[in-house]
Length: 171
Length: 466
Image (tube, rainbow over all chains, first blue to last red; front, side):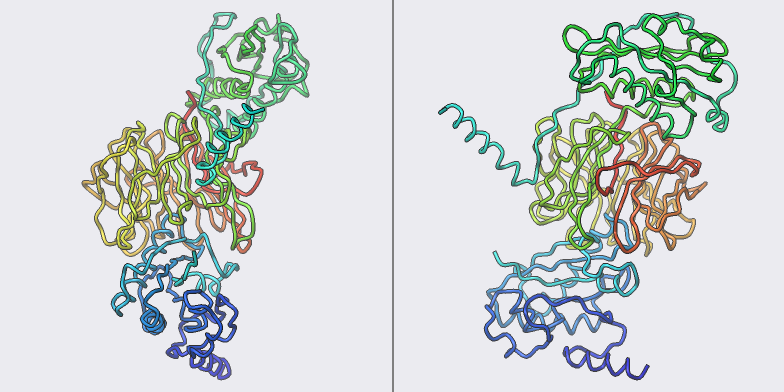
């Protein structure tokens, strides 16, 4: 029990996030790009091209993605910390445009979940624009329950799938 | 040589915009089936006895021997000729009646084969000796123009009279439709219900692992035959709906990267956006007369229901609520719309007038109410009931009389048979995410999985074909 809390605290501090035990889910989805240690230390982005998802992921770590409670689209304090990390990154690289992909877990009906994912991505976008990111730089798309990252049918997997992921799409 | 090259080049030019839209080759437009008079005994008296009780129907033993032919001729419908085709038609009819659980049919492979002259003059003693109460006979005749005439006769063996007969002219490629028309004739005559076999189903064919699922638009006959893929699978396709005249399919595609509704023209194999708008559009539905389309659109994250003329033009916003309003379904007379909304905090079902007025919640039975679909008979609404697991429920149009018909882990998205007696839905397996189309009758007792070549979801049952 104590060990678990310690692990969570350790994880939370390592990722530079507020130590809220409720979220994120115990197992995080893999971060895109070659960096396996999530960190906000910008020295970790050395060698990665600016404007790539790998560079973004190396710079903000697990903060590329925020997670939601069941049926919820609210940005809570932990999501806010992640979005602040994103906003700092996008303020530093004003040439980058990106897409927020909204998702839902499988325990919802298909059409409703697309609408819910849209609402989640839009609320992440609203928070980023409130932090000064130009709304014109942010596209929003919902995949509903069609693109899960965690494949099991249990609470832990669903918690990972209820998400809004900021993605830099290279054309 | 040059001509051939030119042809190839022009074909490539024509094909490329379709491929860019993830579309396969068109399957051609719907051809109506012509009814013809068929010869026979005109004693078409009323059916005696009571067959209104379902348990009684299933006790009716129906003999369906191979359909005869006047002359065994070659036909593109069957490489062994019209005689072999007659047997195939009887098999299709037998499978239809058996799979839907209402009757106990015995098919051609277990029965003697009547000759052509006996089709209109059955030897009743042969069949009463086998315990059959009803007898279905018929014939196939190849016309000189290549089309097929199929006659279908239903006899009461005990009463020794003909109950009904009908005939159709079909192109060889449509021979199964004659079998479905005959199945419908028998079903309607014996149950007093409207027909449903001669209909098609649009659905989503699914392949691949759970996190990289390929979802393609596909269509098939009501018995799973004549399966066709309409999209290639490079873009996710979801939630199709046949137009009432089978000329078009509404569906959602991510082909431009965003969820948007397209109107796919079955005859030409081309598609257009339902509305030119940068916002995502989801949950397409036809009005019963095919002249309007309902869809939901998210503006700044808020999803509401809109109506637009099928020919394009100005959209009318029907709901205006900060919650998610989605999935409208018209009553068959077109005056009302049932839809789902989470304005109360959770997904519940609401009814409104066709112009959006008088929005009223109807589901108050605990759990959630999603994906409501109004029965083509008008008296019931099917929906996804979420109460722990996801199951298919029905209720009357005021929200009363709720009954849960299925008990899977995740049963979702009901669609009605054209006669409102059967509901199809899709069932998703826990963990694997594999899906299949199932159907259940209104008692909840007769449930079966439909055969599909790959996994399947989002069934949308079209009306009786023209």
